[in-house]
Image: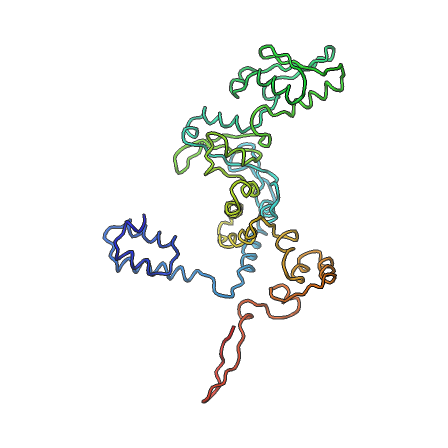
Length: 398
């Protein structure tokens, strides 16, 4: 519902409020969804929403950072340290609880258990056969999944007995396998039906074993970083559809595959999100991953604004910074704030060598030197003003 669905009188009273556009649109949606709402009633609704909105705003000089740290840190003490099965998906483990929270705020380059949730486009999402076509495009297919390997030491030959049913299912031919082996290993292959044979140029038992080891590492189809894909039928808002869960993450490669719905597919690797979709998407991913981690632990009552503040601080430079001595805490302007966090002596020594000056603007440095912090009442000065008649009255000044 939009403004076009209501009368001009109602639009006038709603637009007269100080509400942000999102809340105004929600008011329009509520009003348009009910018959016979007058302009006066719409005004009452809009004013009630405005009052609630103004009440929830942060007061000037509120220590929002400290409140957020407390609001996330205290529930964090109640989180478990275990790795659980992901949402009932068999055999896919994903780090949850405190280790996952630490992983996120540390902005680790790769998660301990990288995974993706891959949604499919309409025709693939409802047909299991079509969904499996996408699975084989994503899951790394190695030789052990396609057939049996044997070595003939007498003839110095490696033989691969391919399983024709598996080849048909994964849509790959013996010719293609022979060609990939030639390209990857630099050997001549002899392919007859489902049997592929090759060996070292010069008879050498050592080289024969090396060829077998190298053969096992070749990815014949799919994405090397994705070791396994689990397919599940789920009830979503759009109806029942197949969803893929991957062990391993290669977000950029997956969203380009035909049949994958790139708009709904996600990864738990925030750096891959940043690389492929940009910093705003990475910020959203940090908020969502952190919120999901807390909710899975029964801590969903932590206000999302605290997590939004953390995500804002981590991403406001256009890159993902960790909250730690190698990121935000270690790059503060204040020498004392840096020293109070970690490696105290190093920070003080470096600051002395470079002649750094601390202006004592933040919380930590003022606590260290015993001055009032510049937040809340600590950032307001009172001075006595003189009046021409009678007693002097105090005046507030910034």
